[in-house]
Amino acid sequence: MDIAVVDDEKAIREHICGLVEEQQPESRIEAYATGGELLASGKRFDIVFLDIQMEGMNGIEAARGLRERREDTVLVFVTGIKDYVFDAFDCLIPHLIDTGNKWYHLSRKSGGKDMLEELRFLLICRFDSTSPMSLVLVGQTELWEQKLKLQAYEAIRQRIDMNIVLGRLDRAETGKYVATHMAYAGAGKEIFTSGAEDEVYKISAGIPRMINRVCEKALMYACQQQKRLVDEHMVRFVADYEMLGGVG
Image 1 (cartoon, rainbow, N blue to C red):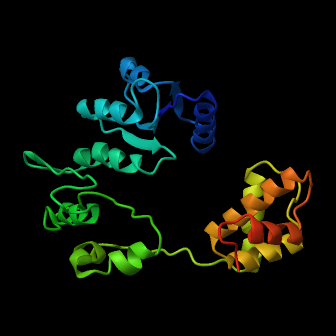
Image 2 (cartoon, rainbow, N blue to C red; image 1 turned 45 degrees about the vertical axis):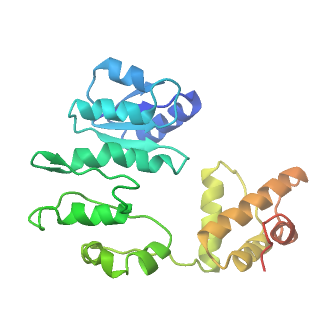
Image 3 (cartoon, rainbow, N blue to C red; image 1 turned 60 degrees about the vertical axis):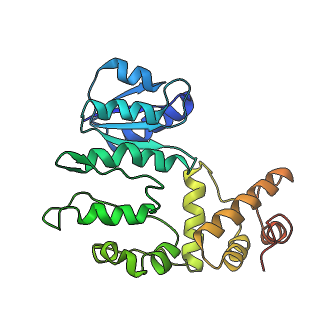
């Protein structure tokens, strides 16, 4: 398998290459600093990891260049800016859906319809004779509990084969969750005491997003105070004084 990694930041480029090599040690990996370099190489890749915000030709422009060649390369966009997600869809969806001479184009707004409405038309464009795409919808619970339960999106809801909701973690799972993240970050020993993990669980109610926020603030506070361990008092302090509105 031939894989390209395109990112103008050398550290990130090398990090992604390392992760890919761990998962696919038999793959041939090439790295590029710009989208222009990728296109100029003229090489065909099975998978391309593209940073979106780059100097010169950005990732979106590079992706359009690949699509103009009608290459069936799998594109993986790498970005921390959520607004670019919709620009990425503009490159991906027209390549996936071709009905005769007409390309269905997915964007944030088209004729006053939102993106989910356009997805509904894409899913029924061939009257279920074939499946036009494999689609993963990821979002907060409101996406399923409110948006997709509207009658207007029944066609989408009926075609969802699997619905997975990440529930709240219990105390033991919270401890493992924190330990896993700390190990991934390279911590060689325990930093959160058992009491601190108790407090993190109590404050976050086992919600992963809240666990992340509380732990991040606690680590920053421990660094400021030049402490090697995070205890329950520090966790409670940042929850009360350093998080917007505090945590009850």
